[in-house]
Image 1 (spheres, rainbow, N blue to C red):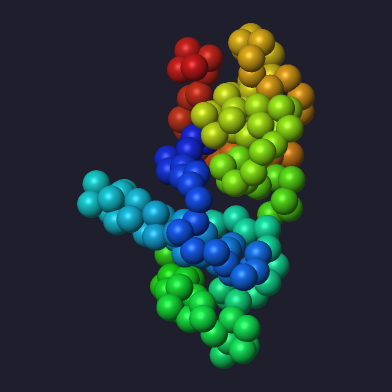
Image 2 (image 1 turned 180 degrees about the horizontal axis):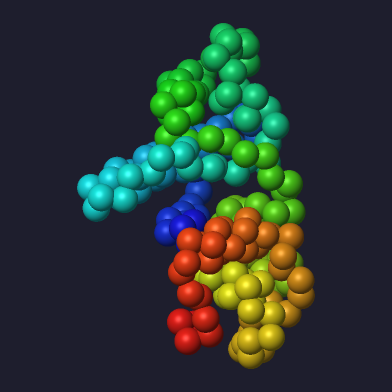
Length: 177
């Protein structure tokens, strides 16, 4: 996501069957980091260099430990070597940084499982930017199709980012929405 809207979203079946959740999550961490690396290269070509690593949220603790640990892999995770080493190199090169996120806040899960209607609508609105607008401008009249509950636990990082932009002197008034 960038500026509150999804840039890349993929929902498809894996071509391989992973023997564990950790391996499936690591495969998706690798795929996500590949997309991030490509987007960072595109932004650099446009003159918008990224100084800090891009956060990649992860709700699987084992995947995070394997990705962030330079130690040798155990017997059960040796088959993951190539993707694991690629992810580790991207972390070391400060291209990505894993960040823990609770499962109920993983917007990326929208493409991986059937969700209840309320959670689906919330994640959809987070991906297309409506939740950010609603969080930043709670009194703004929105379509009745937009998530009506409290989305701040999912959008708080975006609202903080908007506050930083406002401190830089950018005026984000209702005229822009």
